[in-house]
Length: 271
Length: 305
Image 1 (cartoon, rainbow over the protein chains, first blue to last red):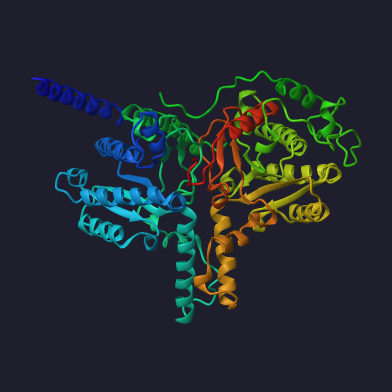
Image 2: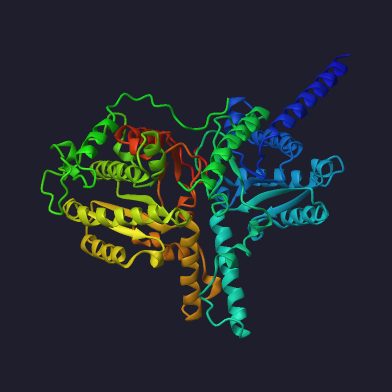
C-alpha cells in the first residue's frame, strides 16, 4: 500500500518538475553547466556517517543533478571528480576515492544507467598517466562504449587540473609547430596563435561553461577550468554537495536568465 | 535557499561619501585631485608638484578591529567594474564615472600601503574593452596617462612601485613613454607594488608565455619535454613580482564572473563579489572583503584535518 503511495508521490513530483522545467525553458537556458562537488566529507561528519561514505552519498546527488540537467535540456555538463591536488590527501582516502570511482565508472556501462537513459556521451578529461591502469582502462571502455551517443555530453574531470591541462596544450602546440617548421610549412614557430593552443586542449570538445557552480560556499575555482570559465557566471551556494537539489539548480538558472538579458542589452548598446 | 555569496553590508564603518566627491568635482571638474583630498580641502588644483601632506601613511596604520595581521593577503587583485553605471545612475557622463573610479582607486592604494598588503593588481583595461566606442577608449587611455604623470611623484615618495602588464602594441606612443618612465623611476620601491593591467587578458598572458617558451625551444635552450608549470609561470607577465598569484580577487558591481582577468594566477584565489559599483567601493567595502577572506579555509586541494 505504502509503495503504491510513494510511487504516486514520485509521479506527481516528476510531473510537477517537468511543468516547472517547461516554464523555465521559456527563457534562455545555459548550454553548459560545470560543477565543483565540494563538501562530501563535511556532509558525512554532519550526519554522523563513517568516513568515506560522504562520497557515496555525493555520487547519488550527482546522478539526481545530471537527471535534472538533461531533463531540462542542458547539453553539456562537466564535473570536477578528482583533482591532481587531491593526490596529496592521505593515501587511504585517495585509495578509497579511486576504488569508488572505478566502481561508479563501471556502473555507467550498465543497461539501467543514466548513460543509456539519456543517450549521454561520456568524456574523461585529465592526466591519465596519473591514474591506475584499472581506472584508466575502465574510463577508456566507457568513452568507447558511449562514443556514438550525441544527444548530451558528460565531461568527467579526473586527475585533472587546469594548469596541467594548459601545460599539456602548450607542449602539444610547440611540438606541432616544430613539426610544421621541419616540414618547411612554417618558419616562425614562436608565432603560436590562440587557436593553436585551444585546439590542443582536452576541453575543446565542449564550449565554455555558461555557469560554474561550487557547493559548500567556497568561492574559488581551485584550478578548475581556468581557461574555459573566463566569462562564466560563478555561483557558490552554501549547501554541501549532497544537499544541493532541484531548487538550487532552478535558482541558478533564473539568475542566469536575469543577468543574461542584462548582458545582451549591454552588448547591443555601445556604453 | 541559494546564496549568491554576496555578503550584506552589515558593518557600520563611515563610508567614503560620494556626495563629497560630487562637490569637489563641481569645483574642479577637469583637474585631478591630489592624494591629500581628505586632509586638506583638495580644491581640485592639480599640480605635478602637489606638495602636501599626502598619504602621510608613510607609517603603517593599525588594522581596523576584526582584521588579523597574520591573515592579511599578500596580493589583492581588483576588477574595478561599474564606473559607467555609476555615472548613468547619477545622470553624469561615462568619463565622470571613470574619474570617480580613479578616486576610488587612490583610496584602495592608500589602504593597501597602510595595511601591509604587498601587491595590488588592478584591471584597468581589458583586451575585450577595445570594442568600446573610440571616444571612450581615447578618454580612458588619456586619463591613465594623465593620472600616471600627475601621481608619479606622490607614488615615488611613498615607496610604491608601479608595473604595467598587458599587450602594449595597441597603446599610443605617448602613453608607452610615460609607462616606461614610471616603471623605471619606481622600480626600486618596496612598500607596495601596484600592477596595472592595460590591454590585458588572462589568455593573452598565457599565449605570450607560450610564445616565449616556443622561442626558447626554437633556440635550443629547452626541450619540449621540459615544459612544466614553473616554466610557464616564469614567462607570464606577472613575473615582475615576487607574489604573482593573488590571494584575494575583488570584483565590484555585482557581476559574478572574472571576465578573463588573470587566468593562470587565479587558480586558488579567493573570490569576493561586492554589490557596490566601483566608485562607491571604499574603505568599508574593502574591509568587508578582507574580513570575508580571513574567514575562509584555504586547503589547496588537500585536507584540513
